Length: 467
Image (cartoon, rainbow, N blue to C red):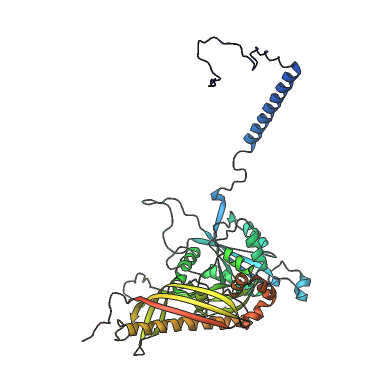
């Protein structure tokens, strides 16, 4: 058996000279030439000098050389962009104003978070006296970037757009074209893709300057709350910059954006002190213009081409699968009293098929819900009554989808996504129709199938019996 050998030896053992395979003693290695030793030393010296230079450079450039302290920034919460005639200000030349050939310019209105004050006696810092804790700035320019630069010049702090909650587009700008704004969104690294996008009826700057929040301290917080609550009713889902860019650059090149308006909201009056000897005055409630969503605008490519009513907006949201919950009102079976049905879950599928050489669109919607309110005395606990309510719920949702399809077909904007569905099912056919798809969509017959199921009737089966 071969004997195993190990490269180590025990301490105290006498070292034996190594032997070759023939049993002869191996010759000791020759010493390296002096030239090789000098080359190795020079190589080590060069490496050491390079490391020393790198260490010195890293020490010089270490730290935040492009830092911006927070007390030098003005945090933008909401930005509004409008387009105005250039002859309103001094930026238009006399010749351009006379000939009427002046290009439009942009107005940027921004809401900034106002820094809180110092600590007060008996409490922590901050101003809790109510009202909006914000300030507003306005800048104009031939480009949007130029308007932002003018806004920067007017302020003691640099506007910081990374914390912008929402961006509002003026109606005139949307009808003129939003190509410059879309380019800025896609190009500027400081603008986040999660920024909410809204349209305004009229100038967007008025929303920022006139809006008064009832429950929140800023318009940004008000819009953020609306964006969370609005989808629960189905009347509007506020898109982000990312989703708008994907829709505009997608197959159908269209998108839907809700309108934000100012609606009057009464505020309880606070009577002041009554002078002695005078009768108390009758105080009337104050009215505050508060932000709310009313309908939506339809954009094709970069321009606003039409509007949708709140009912049509929810019809589009049914097809886009963006209605997590809604309340649908129908007539009670057996009487004309109203019944409110709460939709708790919905799912939609949009497809396109070729039938007898022609295209046909399909919309399939599944609904689940509960009975939320009953106005009559009909017993809804029977299977016949529940089946009738389910059919009425399906018919009501089908009518909303039909109205939305009719309106979007008139604009030639495929908001439901039939084009992308055809692209996935038959790419070759889609490539041949993509250029003329708006016209094809206007002629596309659509079959709508809605299935509804009511799971519960609430805490009671029958309405209260009045004696």
